[in-house]
Image 1 (tube, rainbow over the protein chains, first blue to last red):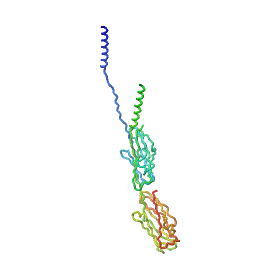
Image 2 (image 1 turned 90 degrees about the horizontal axis):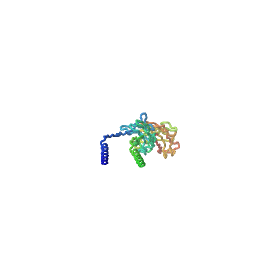
Image 3 (image 1 turned 120 degrees about the vertical axis):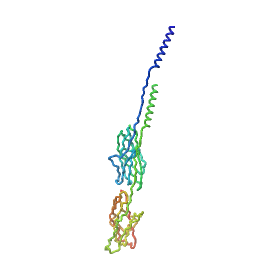
Image 4 (image 1 turned 45 degrees about the horizontal axis):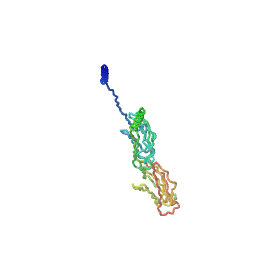
Length: 164
Length: 174
């Protein structure tokens, strides 16, 4: 009988312990991640202090940009075969993360214009820190086969990618 | 078990790296060039002159020698100036001073050359003193070349004949 009483006591104590565990106060803490992404944004503009030019000099070159500042427009008049057009440009990283710029090889017109070069190196890349500037010069030649009194157009692409 | 966990971790990291590469932000900038070519267009100026004379000892006015310049109409023949010399004789010459107007939009260099197969090459006519040097003409400007002389050869027997000499003036952008 004494043995039975001992067992009952043990069971009661065990249940008591379990009950205490369920009754314990508890609280949760949280970690909330709020991520604001950076902005990759570069703009192209005429390079202040540098003039677009052509050889021979009677060929007129005007460069301009307008919002959203993603296209540098170069207007050439009175061009002749063999004329060499040089256009300085300035790229500014106005985003919030570093970027990397590089010319995309090729252009939309490789027949009427030749010898596309850039002092950045045609396939080279340049890192631009936030707020950084890069001034380069793109040069191309009017091909021998162009016709008098005719309009031609070409465009080149600068790839801007996330830097490190 | 520990080894399996390490492999799983490595795979997750690798996928993460690949995911970051594909997800990189990018943007394109452009440089666009619009190019308008110029024009080469040279016309005869009315300042062109043709003056006659002779090396035959004939006193000026003692003959019926004369010269006139006629310019082409406003078409393809406008490129031609015709100088007609009348009543020429051996030793008679015409002094031609070409004057040209640059009606184009770019500077040009004009040179002159005689065309073969005309009387200059039969010996009835010859160029006395050579052809003038090339000249540069700015757009909108008129420039006279140096004069040159076309003379009837003293040995010519082309009595009562029309003799032709033709010259090409070639205008090129410099």
